[in-house]
Image (cartoon, rainbow, N blue to C red):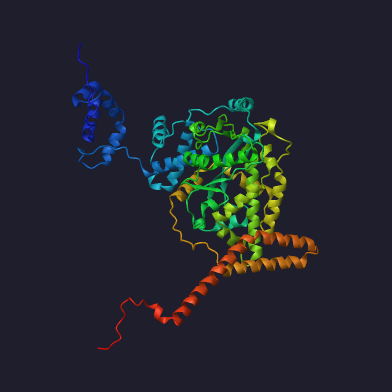
Length: 564
């Protein structure tokens, strides 16, 4: 038996010069077989076949090269346009995943071609570069970006609808077998929020578009909202921003915010973010709630298949059972997606407009343009908390109708018409000529596909490093606190002059003073410290004047007063 050939896996790969490639091509054109050419060069038949197959590219490259070809090899170098196209494509895939939109190989290949053509406009010197979104490119792209779960075809609509119809029965069985109460069943869901964006027809947006170099606001955060099936417990909102310490939050403890603050470069709920939230926020909050309700601490958490939800979460805590919705059924089944997120965004806009009205009314020199320019993420956080507080418990319970109808009480549909009318009314107070459709379009913005131009702008903003000036630390001063109290008393006095109902005013004034009591305590403490500090300094001066000799220790060497 002939001995087996042992392949030397550590053998070095030798680059083939253009001169050798040209010789191979000419010999093949003269009729010589590939096997003979390969044997003479000590190469495999596959290598020579590939060179012969690509002879047109090789000959074209030779024409553009200098005469000395021996050390010249063709390197498959990816240009800037390729790198940027794949970065934009990854950004787009992240957006699709966030929307729970079905995604497959064909969709990605079509988007890659579209982005490549758009980038040619940006890089005219590379307009002749060709790109084919081939199967080979797709496989290499998946490997480079670690996308291992993209399907070749998306699921059919009928299969998704069937899964959505069958899942509630399966979930009911799990609930009954484990004895879960509606108070113990939770759901959370993420949504994107353009926190600094007004409807396109507002004069602010129109004027911005006339500014040279204008780019639409892409200030976007991800918010995760959730609560239980009973509707009596809303979880503290999770907010993911693109920066850990934005200027607006300098010197403000994150724990004091009315949201759970986290950050990463893409402002997304990643696996790391979700695990942090689960262990350090969800578990303690749910356990405390169960203790207060005097029910067993066992939780059923219902999640969708978002990329940021770890599949091994079922092993995280023995008191938490995790059930995943069928793929692509989020819009059909997930409670938070059945109206809670939509009404939350409307409430957010209501509070933002209300804040603008209050600011412009308080100081007539402040215009809406100036308010919007100063509107930062800290103010947005305040409005996010206020909007979440406005979502009623009946709504939090009613959205479980499709998933757990056995636990839902009488619930009327969301009154979006009323809130839309409120938004229109408040916009008119700010002299913005807006209608209900303008706000509807704004709230649907997050669900609309990102255009190639949007992706390019987002990518540029992520790569741009903004230098921000450090703000002064926040702190209380006696002078400013006294001014604030004076303004409040002046405002109450104005209400007193207008209100014919003395009893009502007295009640409101008492409530205001009670609410401001913590600030009064801080002011009085600061006054005491100031007075005490002044007295201490005064007593030291008096003591030094009465006992000047005590200012110097007798044992210390004294400076000489004698003259030489």
